[in-house]
Length: 202
Image (cartoon, rainbow, N blue to C red):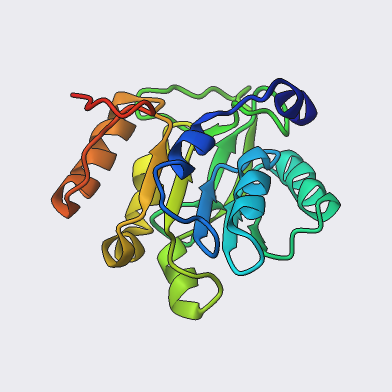
């Protein structure tokens, strides 16, 4: 549960990532796969009222809790999107076999088989670059990506903003396809992969 993460001090990856930035006040963060909002709330508090957090969560059950936690903390600097960050603006089918609000909800993996009993929920997708072009959000200084295998598509839909600002990317990998696709996008921009403790990774 969300509150249990706070009590135990969980999710230290955001803290480690923000520690690599010289000054986070006024920064812009994007949260891909916000779930209940532990990273969204943390980033919004760190960047302050002059900063901004754009938070993306397609699962309707998780989104309700995300919205509640943002409102409960009175965070006026958060922009909420009930949609998945992706390479296209439209819709796709989310697998919700563990129920709405589960952290395991995901789009179909490349090697995943579905059956007539697979629970599928049609959700909205949005390319973050389009939101920037519309003036709905600002280009990011930091992006947290934890989207259960959909990370390469989320980054592809953000590539113009990434190219413009070269933000810090905190990435949670869930498949080899996701990792390979993300590296193909980011490597030409000069990105390399490091662990949260700073070591280079192959």
